[in-house]
Length: 229
DNA sequence: GCGACAG
DNA sequence: ATCTTGTCGC
Image (cartoon, rainbow, N blue to C red; front, side):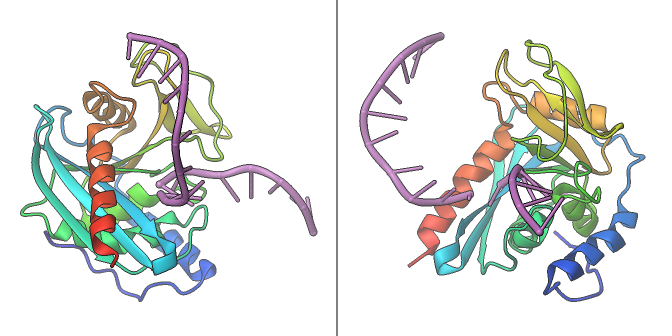
């Protein structure tokens, strides 16, 4: 699948990386509802690292949104392109993730990222960045609230509470299992927040994390294991 | 200046 | 993210 080429090379410093985020943020589309949950193809992407050997492996797993069955898988291996810096995660993950997505037979209707979208210091997290570069609808589902605040959602699965940056709702804490720690959902690109939560619920029939990210996590770990000599 | 901080 | 064994529970 084709990726949009953005002018400008890969940032070499944190300052340059932040400038890239500030520039690309204008391309994020927030006024589309996104695809209906339970229909079409949904992809999960994740990355595993071996910093000692400077190897990174990414996986993209495509599920049929109606049945949650795997319909396509792809992996890519590369070199670590950026250190982990809170707020700049995308620069560490995106090159290899793009390679894995490009290796898919056809593009999915939605991409679920392991991390944040709008819930980000500059409102341009990994999911937003990946959405702008691919043009695909994206959402972020994270395991931690990062620097944001929230009240605990009610105990039943499906309960939500606002994830707040001051008074701004940048995402939602969403309970995907009864009485289990919530996940943190935020919009990436071309999907609204309510729909992002609905997709997340549709992708969590049995576990706290979406099937997409669980599958992608397992696959990228295997790819890393089978890559490093 | 110090601490916190998606993966 | 990653380093790591057993263990409690459905």
